Length: 143
Image (cartoon, rainbow, N blue to C red; front, side, top):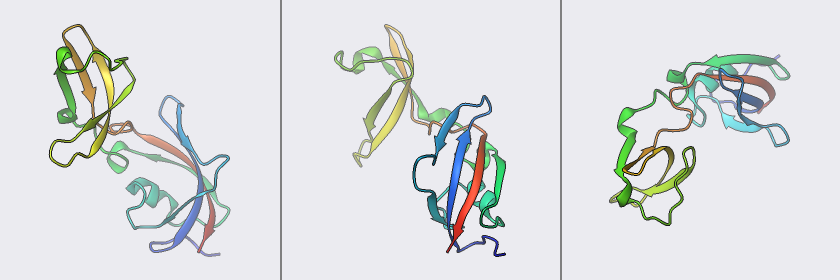
């Protein structure tokens, strides 16, 4: 039976969880994820986990943060004076805001980490940066 290898278009059902068991993503109830192995369409550890699987095979893989979204970057945690943020913008810890990158105008989602009367701390890291990820995989097709 054929094994998935670099360059193959594959379809995979998956469930992603964190070390505490929190599920952050799943293909359940949706079409399987389709991508080309080795093309950079998915995080490196996911590519490596699927490589060598056979159709119908199921397995669980642990992807360290370095093979997922990388470590959290302290430079992407930004402290603003509270007065710099318009009063009509709701600020709740854990909530998200969209910042516009100076020059390019690119929209960057940020998570509100701390709110005081004096300042607000925003985090522009990917929500899964610095986290090890566990995936339950099932290879649906190679083609």
